[in-house]
Length: 235
Image 1 (cartoon, helix red, strand yellow):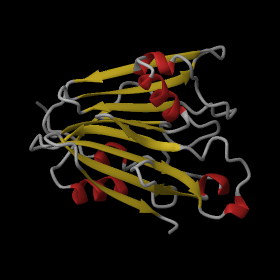
Image 2 (cartoon, rainbow, N blue to C red):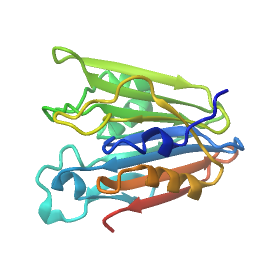
Image 3 (cartoon, one colour):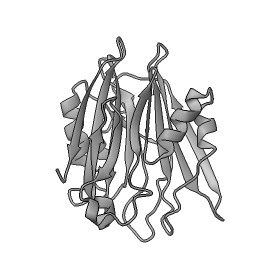
Image 4 (spheres, rainbow, N blue to C red):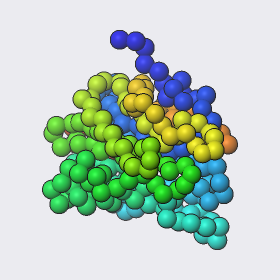
């Protein structure tokens, strides 16, 4: 196998990748690993921090309430856990996925109810991830993108866990007007055993001017307990 790239080697030269999700497995195969980050260019997008609820839910909230111009696409639950399943997304589809799974539906069926974001002219893709650690460890990534003519293309990628391997998806492929959407399959990156090392790798990979917040969670595959790290640039 070719040498895996670190996340910095994969996206370090891109000034704006928007919001991103990485899912994978630690090298020692003891942990399921997730990372979620957000970036921002406008004052409204940059006016955010990550916070954690009592039940471990990660959500976005305004850094300065007085500066919020439009909360509809920037305030949402980003990471939720339920019965051995972790859901992470870049929007309020987190709650859609959780609701539908609790009703017995699938990840894919839940996302059929949603589309890309209505933020013309960018039409930001909705990216989502799901991790099952309930005895049959596996994970999926999804992206909902605007197609030619205004329709919605839906792509889902299912992975068998591999030691030290992660998969990364993000909303944009760089800066521009409009912003160019992510293209191709999720990128393959290396995942170390140490949560602090991985947290540093992800944070350092993001453009210093545009990065906003990062959340990383290492969940034990033996007992479901987890260790996490949360970084907010503006707090």
